[in-house]
Image (cartoon, rainbow, N blue to C red; front, side, top):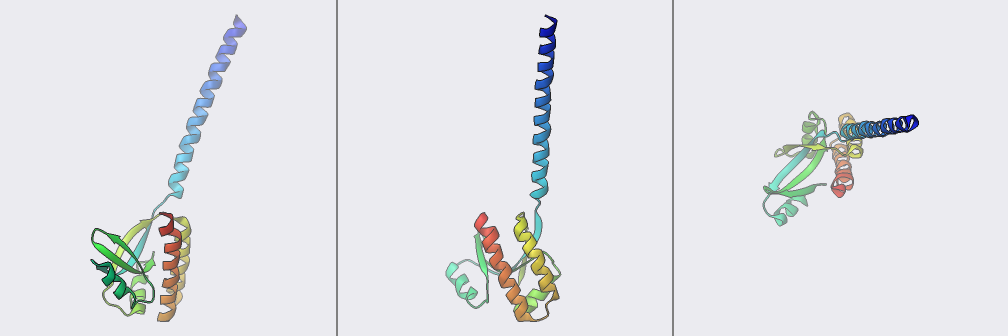
Amino acid sequence: MKWFKNLLFISFIFIIGIYIGTYIYRNKRSKEKDVFGLNFKVYLIQYGVYSDIDNMKEIGNNLPEYFYYNDEKGYHIIIGITMNKDLVNKIKKAYEIDDIYLKEIDISNNEFIESLKQYDILVNSLNDNKAIIEAEKQILSKYEEIVLKNE
């Protein structure tokens, strides 16, 4: 009978150990997801908002590169993206457009954020307007490829 009590006690301790181990493992996993799911502040450089898609596309055809999105306010033309607010004026100057608005969004896609950081370094080092616009074309393409297609 004593061996039965010992077996019961060891089994009980074993089950509690499994329960505690599972609890700790799940807690650790949820914290890891929080670390890798960080949102980064990104600035969309917006050319305008249009109520009609045809009007938006007609105006967009005059731009070297853009993408648009639609919400309750209308169709927004985006001509650039940056994480560095100081680069906005440099990009604005490159496009030679005065009516540019800034829209702040959060992005959690790490692949895109790493690309954007590299493009921001590149744009910061450039002085040629055509080269800046070309870099913005590339990052807009990356945004469409990586972020928009994965939403």
